[in-house]
Every structure is written in structure tokens, then in C-alpha cells.
Amino acid sequence: MTGTVDQYEMANVLTRRIEVFARLSQDDRALLDRIARRTTREVSARRDIIREGDAPRSVLLVLDGWACRYKTLPDGRRQIVAFFVPGDICDPHVYMLKEMDHSIASITPLRLAEIARDDFEKLIADHPRLVQALWWDELVTMAIQREWTLNLGQRTAFERIAHLLCELYMRLHSIGQTNGNSMAFPLTQVDLADATGLTAVHVNRTLQELRKAGLIELQSKTLTIPNMGALKDAAMFNDNYLHLEREGRHLDAND
Image (cartoon, rainbow, N blue to C red; front, side, top):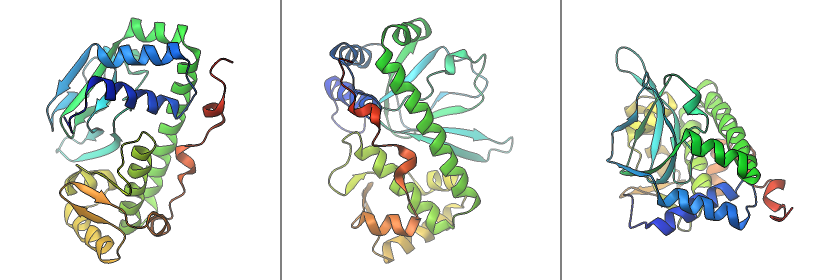
């Protein structure tokens, strides 16, 4: 695992993630707690969880650790199209597919909750607040994909890396997974290259530029951002696509 995270903490991470999108009732929270405590699966680092062509049978929730969604070409070249952090749902509708059209792999040691199709459909039927949160989650996922497309098509290497670092920090901060202006950062330069359409050599050079500009500190798999405002400016980063402040968040859970 990425640290000494117990089942209670993992349930809290999942609840905090969902409550970014909608205020939950006590029954909703109790359900998420049960999900985090049952049907869990541990995966070691750098392993495929499910491969393109496999038949998906459950919805995967990341409880602890980092993962990624990726596509590969026949010659082995890889494009990472999403990173998953604690609290993320890998794909709430994946069980509807006959076969996967992409692969999901662990980056760090990983703990997942697996929700069977019948259980997930019952969750949707019985918990409208969670349905609202899942819709928000899907909208944010699509918004992130649009930003990643803009990254690949228009931003410079410097802006791409800076933008991705801002995004990851904001996502982790929203679920209480940062420590001041620092966060765990298990990604390698190859991971960053595969996510940003750059070579590993270009990523290394860009990280050095960010360091020299005083925008980041990266040591022992910990990323520190001394001045978030300055890094956002360098990346031309606007966090509106993450929708961290929503009306649904402020609804009374008893409505």
C-alpha cells in the first residue's frame, strides 16, 4: 500500500471523494463504508488490473494507491489517458461492455473495492444522492479528458507538465490527501511521458526547468509546490473543469 491506511481511513477517502459531488445522508455514508470494507482486492505495483479485450464483471473503486487507464499500439507504445487516485471510480458503467476497449494498471501497490453488477444497480436504484454524485463524477471525468486533449494539442511541454501537476494536487487536496503544499508523487518520468505525449528525456528536461524556476521541488517521491499561484500561472491552469465547488455539495442531506 501507499502507507499505513486502514479500512476506516479508506472508507473516509471514498466518502470524501463522493461528497465532493453531493451531500450524503447517513445511510449513504454507511453504504460507502460497507463497500470499502468488503470485496476488496490487493494488487502489487506495476500490474495490469484488467486488459483490453477482457470481459469486465465489476465496478472498481480505488481505496488506496494510484492506477492509470491506458491504450497501447501493436508495437508497444503506450498512451496513459487517465490517472486514478484514492476515491476514484475507474468506470461506473464498465460492466455494460462485452469487452474492455482499454486497460487499467496499478502504479503503486493498490487496494480496490469491487462492486458486482447486481450490487451496483441496487445502489443506483436505492440511493439517489449517490446517483447524483456519480453523474457529477462522469461529467468531471469528461472535463478532465478535454483538458488532456488540449494539453496534447496546444500546450508546450513546460505547460503540459505544470498543468498535470496542478491537476493532481487539486484532486488529492479535495479528498484530504495532501500535506500542506506537498503530496505523494509516485509517477516516474516514463509515466509522465506517456501521459503528456513527450519523451522521457524531454520530461526530465522539463522537470529541471520547473525546478530551476522555483515552481516545484521533487524528492523521495514527494512533490512540493512552493507557490501554487505561480505554478498555475505558468500552466495557464483554471481549475473550473474540476468543479470543486458545486451547488449539490451544499444541499441539505435531508431534502
